[in-house]
Length: 206
Image (cartoon, rainbow, N blue to C red):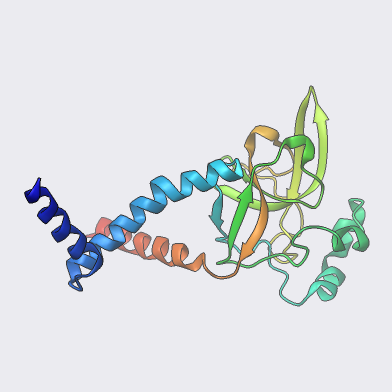
């Protein structure tokens, strides 16, 4: 029993008080395990979604120049699809958000998802996409949604391609509804993924 206490004290000191490089490495690994397997699943359970936190990795929801300037350049598509400036002004996250932001998601029943909500959904490539709902309808008791990125430069209309068709998204593809934006924190993940891809490319060439 005493030996176990001594060993535990040594382990505790090594993790929390030792300033060696190996202690830092262990700290990072412990933090990763806690976040990955305890904090993240717990948050997902509380928010009723499999992905409670996502990083924004594209510019498809950026406005750049403020709401009025953005609307002036974007309005034609929305007006033609029965969304006026007054409607959009009341939408959640009406000013969009930027690449590198972190978005907190919450599960939402399909019948409660409204036009203007920002949702995350799965694409054909199984990459999660975060765009705004612009249409909603029901067919054979299944809800369907059309989405569009706010950025008028990169997303002048809803995308329809072999890899992504956001003109008809079934309720089963919806991951969650964006309820909170945390600016720039997502760059930690983006930079890590980019660095990993660079290293992977170098390894494959070698």
